[in-house]
Image (cartoon, rainbow, N blue to C red; front, side, top):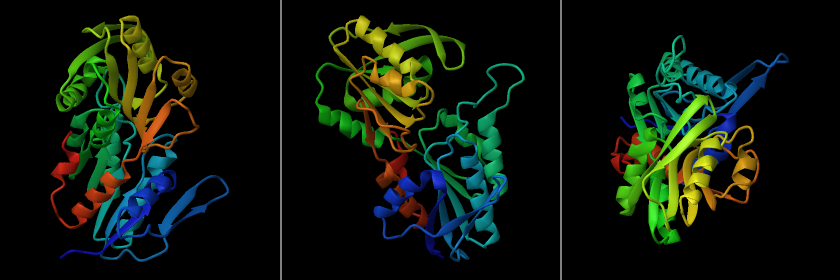
Length: 311
């Protein structure tokens, strides 16, 4: 049986959901949010979802209300007898908490996976998880997509000579290596030390960048401290230019000012998270078409391997 399909969105990702549906034959489903005077809210559906494949689009960036709204929408679909409920989470929040890196801390990514499962989700579609092993935190299928599918064509269009791919830290070497492979270029690695969260105390570059056009590859940019510092060190080591391609533009605190005042030529991001303000150095490339294709193929039980393999 191939049930009907309906696509809905929570409030924080409606801008992206509208783009996604523009690439399909489906319109964005009608939903509502009832707000109580104390700040509590109750989301629901204005149309039947009985027996349908329901896709709910929501990135779970801060505030945590975005995650909780998604959970309520999943629960509402379940209680309305949806056939399958698929959470489309372009940016999976709390992914940086994928392990115990110090005593007496939570593993937030695992907790979020458990909560989504408890709410009744049947499948999760997401993009560029901070740690790929988070897929194993779920007991339901996870489709892990890669923004490299849109970043690599853009980088090729720039026709940069003497191109080098850089990882801002040792944890991102696998991602950077994939870019270097498909762009047929060399790779360098940044070694960084942190004394506390969101603050880099030391960074060194492993590899030569003299006379090179460098592209830093990462999954998340938060306060922009790491990327800006890496760009400065790369220029000090003789790089001709430095760009960064980063999937999720969290961009909190002083991030926009740091990027604008940095030596970066360009910061290229996706629209998994909406930008809080404009910045001349930031270019946004949409991933809506990728998600539209995957949603269509998941509904039709067709292969999606071409969409989630790292390009």
